[in-house]
Length: 267
Image 1 (cartoon, rainbow, N blue to C red):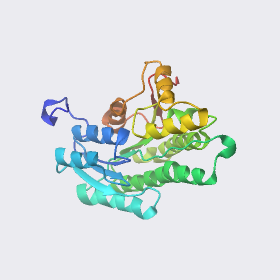
Image 2 (cartoon, rainbow, N blue to C red):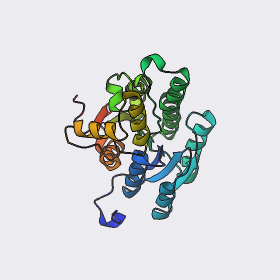
Image 3 (tube, rainbow, N blue to C red):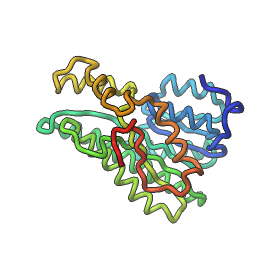
């Protein structure tokens, strides 16, 4: 149960406007809910508007706006930025979450899969970050950018070459952007989740079952048991880090990628 705003702890994102992509479900929806609880006005973007997004509009009227958009399209990126500024008057936070997944044996990995993954996970991520940063620079009062990477970006995996490479690129672009934007007071960081139980994991599990000869659900069980804390993550496990990096508590943190993975990766 989510307590009313006035009964919770002191909010950390009051008077801030955030754009959140990939907000239809999973981690993006959980972070959107928490940003709203923390007092932010939020523009939620995804290819399709989900019931979960509509429910947040009902729960937080006046704080929430929705937009159907494709981050791989320059015109849609422009629409996202314009919609946030038009509705709320400013842009302070970007939670850059939109991503897709695919896997295949290296010798079978296709150009089509490569193009789709890099278009969303890298091209879309970078050019939305660039557009948000331009708006923040124009406003002249800094900002926070939080990109979503993955533990897959920390290492290669035999079946997951394209996806791992895209998430490694997120880490690299986060570091470069942080250095480029530091003079403007814009902090750029990333979060690297481990295995998180979201709707996307049904697709992930099915792909591993296909290529590793497993029964449906077996890969999901195995990866959960392998986490040092003993279970897969849940979307709500990511929201604390997402709020922290978007808040004044992280004013002296930039160019970092924070692992939120139950101990899977140590750095």
